[in-house]
Image 1 (tube, rainbow, N blue to C red):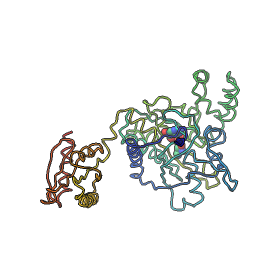
Image 2 (image 1 turned 90 degrees about the vertical axis):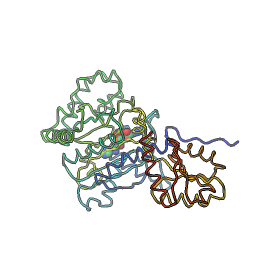
Image 3 (image 1 turned 180 degrees about the horizontal axis):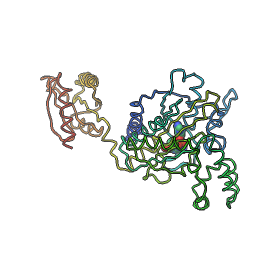
Image 4 (image 1 turned 120 degrees about the vertical axis):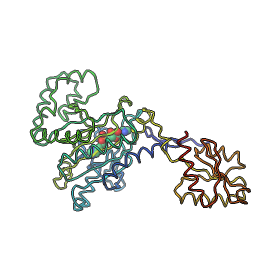
Length: 426
Ligand code: HAM
């Protein structure tokens, strides 16, 4: 036998019965985004590698350690996208999208790639639903973005999560704070690698997961205590909007994100049931990014919600996602001669809005019903010689076992009525 080929390491696959649960999670996370009027953007899965090193930051782990970079046949240096924000801003600049009016509110969904050490909830191909709102400095917009993310997780049914928020300051106050933090870190007994990181990207040291480093940085100065007047007012205004919408949050002054473009409002959704990979979504403002990428001096804010982790979070909370999927109606012909009629009836019921799974491999009623049960069908429409002769069809409600009958024209409405009763009964 030929050698089997396996999927690359660290890539999650979603196949039945989980595939549709994954799709459901992605759709549930998307719905509040669409309801808020964001417009869809479809972007390349690979870009000029320089877009990410310049946009996300050369010294971030995402760029320096985790990027899938390759040279194409034209000797161009390209990278699989590790995140969505840089690509959105590149497209906004290149296609002059801001001419369509500000703020430009966009959303996207798809796969991103990071060569991380794989473990549960940390994958090399990860999926996000993301939004970016470009070109408005307004605390109300920040609160809108955060509220959409909160609503997305809440609607999915998640409760065991927390919104953490802080301000990372602006170009006026961040450099002063950065030097202050660097002086503090310079006096600590850190290993060489961490010392180097303190020079390049001192905020990342605060995010070091090692207990000994956490102990050392316990008394480190924190950005939120050193933001300028304007940033503080802005931050408090965002919190007021969140209060007004009754969105609970925790101000976490130690919140550090893995991407360098953040300024001012920065947030993360943390789930308590996921262990180390607890970030189910995150985002913030990036007021310099568009300028850094060669565009106008316009600000932006957005988030990325992790679909893989949201699915794990839902499972950890025992949410019955399968129950939220539309169960099919099985259409069974009990004899091969009835198959054509089953085919036509299936099409008709689909037109009426039902999910219909036509069972083409049933040898008789018994095996047909077995197959219908395996498909998770809510009801089975049975087409046998009697039904054809009388024009009255038997419909078996598969949860309760109740059998009803309906004529051709009323099949759809009778099924709908009984489905509602059957779900109430179960
Ligand atoms: P991020 O925090 O790097 O932000 O990613 C957003 C979410 O993607 C995370 O909270 C997590 O749920 C999920 N995620 C990230 N890496 C992995 C992984 N290796 N495996 C599984 N899930 C993962 C961004 O990507 C920013 N672009 C978000 C943003 C948009 N900020 C402003 N606008």
